Structures are given as C-alpha cells and as structure tokens.
Length: 113
Image (cartoon, rainbow, N blue to C red; front, side):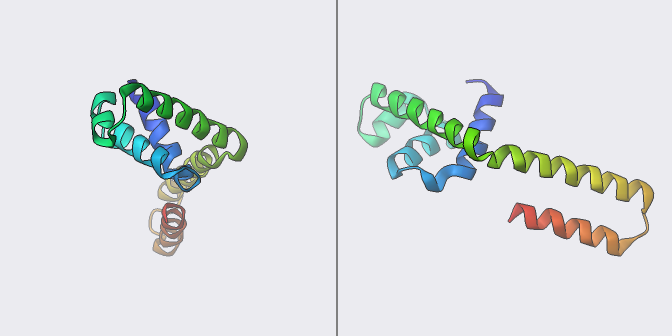
C-alpha cells in the first residue's frame, strides 16, 4: 500500500475513530496502524480475508466521507502550517523574545492535545 495513503488513513482514523464501530476500529487498527496483512487480520478476528477487505473498504470510504463533510483533518493541517509559519517568523524576527516564543509553543501544545 502506498505510504501517503496509509499516512492519510491513519490521520483520518485518529480524528474520526470515535464515530466508528468497534469492528471497524479493530480492523483499521490492525491493518493500518499495526501493519498486519489481510490474512493476518482475518486470522486474528476469525473471519475470511474477503470479510476483512470488505469491512476495510467500507470503513475507509466512511472515513473519507466524514472528512469531506467535517474537514477536521484538512483544518488541522492548515492550523499546523500557520503555526509553522508563525514559529519561523518569530525565530527570524524576534529570536530573543522568550515570552513570545513561549506563547507560540503554548498554542502548538494546545493543538496537539
């Protein structure tokens, strides 16, 4: 599987995991986060490879549908880019302003919580 797709699906999973069923969570976690094969997930869950494949396909489509409606991941990426730009500006323009750097660090920390 393509690394960019796996990275995106892991990020979407982080944002939308509470909206999924336990089975969807389990399959996505095993396949994408734990990097198990379809066969290994099937064996772990005592189902067929086809059942795992079908569930993963529906679950990833659901994650993409949530993102297309809610934009949590896209908005997060925009905020991260803005925070990076702010950090770079502060470092270049106010390198000795510890208070300003602390405020910026605090904003980044809030975003990660």
